Each structure stands twice: as structure tokens, then as C-alpha cells.
Length: 292
Image (cartoon, rainbow, N blue to C red; front, side, top):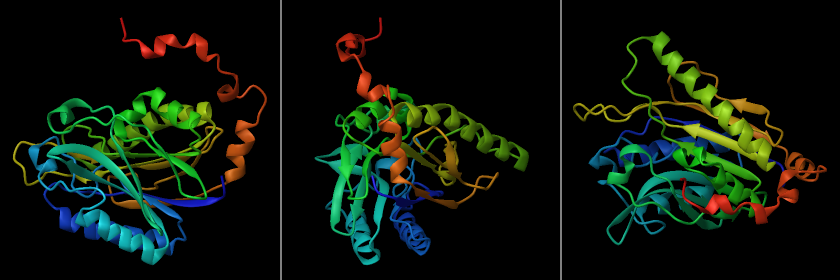
């Protein structure tokens, strides 16, 4: 892995506002480039919105043929940057929760969410492939929200060579807090949970893990629908150390940038007894069996 500067975005992406969300995405990409980022990652479903409601599939598009993906391909080429963005993908009338990657040379690939959470089962078909994408400076994997709670996903990507795991979220947390103190508590709780999970993912797999989350109220125009996201960005190095995170204690739009040192991945993975090199896979049969 080579040194790589990444930008992580937390932002609100209301459902039913695809045109505005796409315009906001382009603005974030420009800000990332202004901060010398090689890659910018935006939250889960940041273009079409995430709300646990039929409206989150109403503006679905083809990927990569759709207007949103094609628009971001143009931006990526113009600015010489890689963009990782989320959208409701449509294929033959079926909807997927998809994160796609575009770059200076066009479309790179897409990752469909494999494990759907809560009410997402009513709107999306689950994906099945877990893929690694080579963008030159790094090999990356994309793990969408709830997929991060399954350690097997990050392990599969690491085994296949991923050096950077990008983890876009649209993690909901319940009713909108009535006070600043309660909003701050939601942000704090979200980050504490991330530290618990993703420091372990980075350390166990000897890779960088970089996260971003939707921020704000995504369904204010839908009566009786609570779709609230706490935001938060964070980057963890291969030794499990948090090396960057968003600064705001309130729920707000923000971008965090961080330079990732490629030598840390190589150093971690070349240590004596590093677990990826010493696994006894013949003993792991239970991983392919259903829980009793």
C-alpha cells in the first residue's frame, strides 16, 4: 500500500431529495480535493437517502449507467479523485443498497450490502459478493453499515488482500433528541460503539478502517417516520489506534481528512505470528454452519 489521503464525510441525505443530495455530494468531493484527498467516502445511501420507508427506493437508479453514477464519474475524472458513494441501485426491478466507486479512469466497481438490518428486508435484496477493489495506491474493501457487525466480512476482505476497509453507515438511533445534551449523547454513544468494534477489526486484520455516518433527520417530510442519524467519522490504523475523527460533538455535517501511511500495513502484516499468516483453516468448519 502507498501513502493515501482520504476524506470522510458525515452529512444529512433526506429521502426524496436525490437531486439536492447529488449536488451536495459534488460539493463534498470538491472540498475533499481542496484538502488534497486522493479518495472521498460518503455515507450509506447518501444520494437517495435512508429512512426505513418506501421512499428510499423510489429514486433508484442503474449502476453504473444511471445519471448519478455518470455525474460522479465526470467529477472524478475532472478532479482526479476517487469517490465512494451510496445509492439505491435498481437492476431488473430489484433494489440493492449499493456503494459504488468511481475514479479518474471511470467506474471502478460496486459493493451491495450483504446483511440487511431491521426493516431493510422489506425494501432491498441482499448482495452476495464481497469484493476487493484495486485503486493503485491501495486495495480497498467496502463494508456497508450492519455488515460491519459481522467480523467475517472484514476477514474475507483482508484475506483477499484489502489494505483499507471503507465503512459507510446510515446508522439510526431512535427519536430525534429534544436538547443539545441529548444530541451530544447520541454522537458520543455512536463513537464509543465504533471504537469497540472497529479498532478490533483494524488490529485483527492488519489494515486501515475508515468510517463515516449519515448525520441528521432524513425523513422530516414523512409523518410518523423517525430516520435520525448521529453522524461521526473515524479512521483507525493497522495497530488499532484511532488516527482521525470528526470534531463536532453535535449532530452536524462535517468532513475529516487523514493521511494513511502505507508502510504501517506492511509492517503490521509482516510481524512474527501475525494471525493472517498462521490461521489453521482446517479447524474453521463451524464458520460455514448455521448457529444451533
